[in-house]
Image 1 (cartoon, helix red, strand yellow):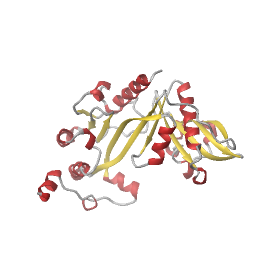
Image 2 (cartoon, rainbow, N blue to C red):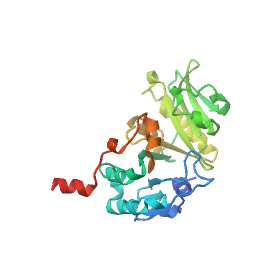
Image 3 (cartoon, one colour):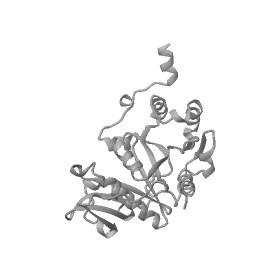
Image 4 (cartoon, helix red, strand yellow):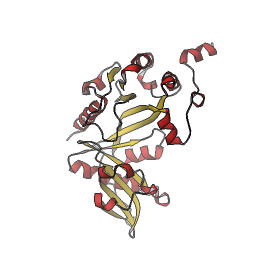
Length: 278
């Protein structure tokens, strides 16, 4: 397998998730498609999307509900792809979705392994590295391992590597079988054991183990999570695509424990801000 083949597989999966064609991610202009459910999509996705934007660097593909096409298309055509995923432009997108009780929710960067860089990184000698399987996770669905494992989708957690200090689990990389071709890696290290090379050791070990099973490991983190992004790069991963997902304000309110209203999401259009400055 080559880096090109890995990227092609990822694009093909994103095409399934978004209900578009793989070639759409390689175009120079925005592409808008109607979202639809698919049994082959990543299993944690809630489909169809209201609005999901994906960029592999060339353009943006928007998978949407048809009723939002006009203002999403206007937004994508007016703003350069490199600025559609950032403020202040996102205030305008939020403002357009506000009457529908929707808002920007998830924003993340996704990483794929670079086969020219990926290798088993050494765990400090005083710790032990263990390969773990689904049956080993039974007692680990706790807050401290909430990134490596997912309590709500236990059946998808299929493989992991743990770092142990005299029998005590101190770091865990777990992966979920999110779709037929790609398994997602999550990582946790106990706070008192961080910055010792544990995260990169278990992450790189798990990535190699996933590849050995003819699956593609992928890694995701929020753009502001510098520690996680640094671990991805150190472990042999490279940025591959970015996603932005719009969700209902009720859903967002449940996540943050606060009801969202138009008053809690202030914003004006870019033109209104430009007019006020001039």
